Length: 399
Ligand code: NAD
Ligand code: TYD
Image (tube, protein in one colour):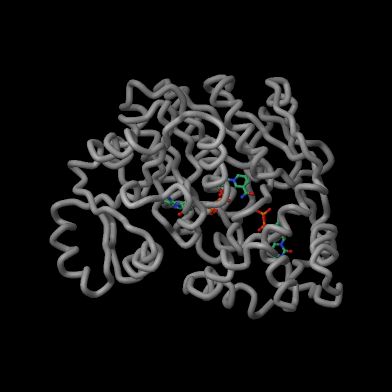
């Protein structure tokens, strides 16, 4: 089976790709634009001299001649210097192959004869690319998204472009692709909005309250609409907050762990009594595997961790594991429109056989220790990623 995985260099996407490569005989095509959140190191052990592909067009080939001396690389949708510089730095330590878009599918087929992963650097908004890659695939697993609520509060532009329009582009390609068996759309529990006491069921109305969850809700319903209207074989997955290795250091658990290790103040929004339900990233991968096999087309499935904790609990546990003082905690200005609680009922996927094998405590410890042991991974981001530095400064400076 060939899977097309969008967003495969991100946190959940890369963990899913590794889990799938280690536990099945599938071949995988990743399509990832390598935005700030796309980290090639996440898949380093599966990348070699021939399977990292950068599609270019005739027009871009001319553009490459101009820009190559300046930045070293370019690719099909390089539009400005910032994008070009970012890609240049992301690809610097790898050996990408620049392939004319006309020859891309042939090249991917050749790559997949020898290895099980072909990594294509490209944007889901590019419908030509989506169609080409989908024609080679049996299943799509669509993770690619702008994923951070705080960034969406700053500027929702990229969220609408990627999460809404990008999903639409993929669905359009899926509509034209006759051989596709399933289009697994990764949505989120945040589409339901803030929970009170009763966990949301799949049939409950969506009530997103921040620009990230609103763009995800639009994508979720667009996927459903393409099933209803055109028969695209869509299955929608709504997982709760994920945690685990390789989470980009802008989300709660890596932010707190890294700040604790660096003896920096730990920013807790408001009173820290907000609650999240934590799901281990490998369990999300297992849930998706189950839905590839047994998920009913046209249906949505909640995936809960069943590990609801207050943010303060999470923060204090990280301080215990890292051996740091609670004095580092700094209550800062709350996130505007903060959803105090997410809570979902996942009886439906449990009915298909979904279960977790390890306890939250065990997995939480393992995760924090992963960041302790893999300082190189996050230090490189903190040191080299200009977009990261800029966002962290802007977001946290006046809190
Ligand atoms: P992430 O931000 O770590 O990774 C996103 C990936 O998508 C990156 O590799 C990035 O380069 C890529 N990408 C972004 N825009 C793109 C574009 N236009 N074209 C191609 N690639 C693009 O995100 P994550 O935390 O791994 O989340 C993955 C998915 O799961 C998202 O759809 C998110 O909404 C959903 N989700 C996440 C969580 C969570 O707790 N992290 C929970 C529920 C659902
Ligand atoms: P986050 O990891 O951004 O996930 P989401 O908002 O999508 O659930 O945040 C998890 C919780 O932690 C949320 O209630 C906001 C809070 N939080 C902080 O208190 N401080 C921080 O620095 C961050 C990043 C999050």
